[in-house]
Image 1 (cartoon, rainbow, N blue to C red):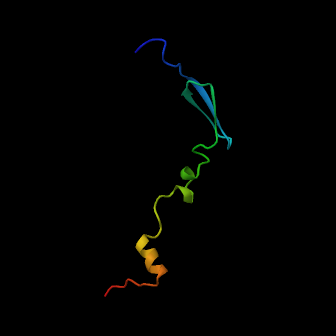
Image 2: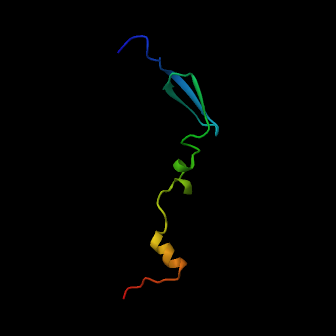
Image 3: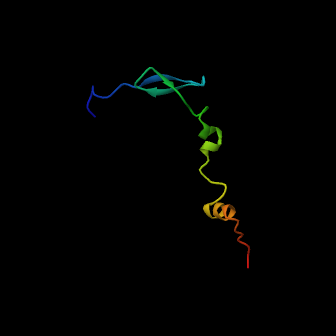
Length: 72
């Protein structure tokens, strides 16, 4: 590696808008975030974080048009 071209890493104080504070290493001394793992809905288990639908497309179609898929 060439000397003198790489940034120097320092202890970085990170502050989130929710008030959460933690430290990481970066080339800046301070960082201010809008969301972090403590306040983002995906990490808190909110509905926005779930990727699985409760009902599939076929079930929605059948319910919308009143079709029953009973075993024959």
